[in-house]
Image (tube, rainbow over all chains, first blue to last red; front, side):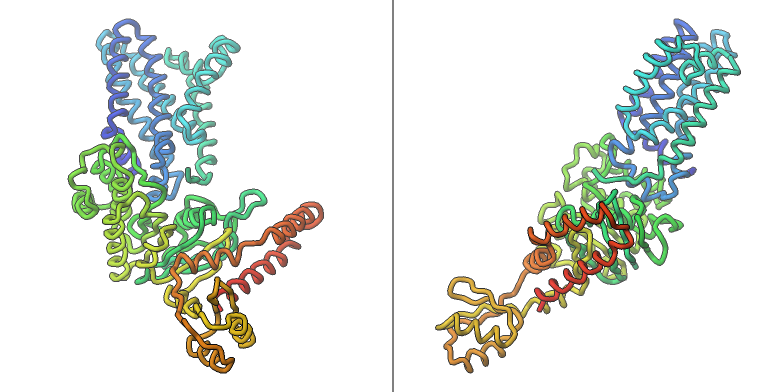
Length: 200
Length: 338
């Protein structure tokens, strides 16, 4: 698992588009944190989810999942390594981009977001292990937030993104709901990764 | 050592790979030949644990791929067309793989040199030509210095120099005691490389033999021209040969040159030309595959049988029919070889 984490972090740092994404989102996060801690927390969650999704789905998009599973045929360990990588990246991103929030004297908000945002990263990475396509996942998740969580649930129902927004404000019950969703998706991913890796 | 035992993969009612059994042994290069869609890639993917077999066993060094402790140090594989993350440089790609497999990072630069990519090491993979990506894929396979190499169409995109380089690399690997299993549709290239041949068609292995034996079995095809072709053909057929007529020449299978000469002498037909028609691997392959392919009439009967099966029979009841079909196909192959 450690080998997967090291390899994934090295890959992230050497793929120009991935490194650029982290840098751009980081700069955007700093700007937003100057405006509002709420907006920064929102961006941290969205970015963490996105990093989690792309970290896993890129392997399927570029077929490098073949080399990943050839090198490490025990797929559960690969998945755990990818989830750990998503946590590390999102913690680093959240910690760096939210430095202004910390300096401005809102350490509680900073620490809560630092705790909750990685859950979104894990949720994204596990969902990507199931769906295997970033495009389908991003479009599906956007539609889910718009139609299910916002229009139907008014962002009040016990659904993942609504739960994240409240959990990032310190709501422990909503944090547990988000944790439950994350664990459910991880369980789904543990079954989904057993699927055949078919050629193009 | 690679062993496949009754390896089968079904997608619904379709058997993409059906009871494939063969071995690839150390010190030899085994060619895995088949037309597109014949089941080669699915077989290799099952061998490498990427696709789950419906039944059967695929073993490398007596163990399933997923059970190997350090698979990349035992098996190097080249699958698909030069897989790499397009945003990474060739060197970064190999370092990523080295970190993943636990291979020595110090091997990265020598390998880049070995595959001829040292000048493009810092170039992004997305800018590589197909041939360069194939070279990188070979370097990736060699990273763990494995004894077993499994390559699916590795020559795709390589220029003639690249193909010659790959051929020498694989021969050297086998000379050093390594096991090489290679699939390719470039039969002329493969003929210069392989020691053993496995032919697969429609998901079923049609022929397993050393390449020399395959050539030997097909070398009794003679091209004969004489004064009276019809009388000659009759005489050869009475001697048990299979005779085809090609213009004013006869295409004779099943006789040696000496036998054909003696028979023509006894039949008192002057011979103008008698030559051994050496077949290429491609010709032998196509003969074997076409001999085992069902005719339109057989397909119609088979379709009717399947429809009947769907209506009434259990899978168990269908097995004897499949076995009978395999026996028929094997007889057809033997007929061609004879």
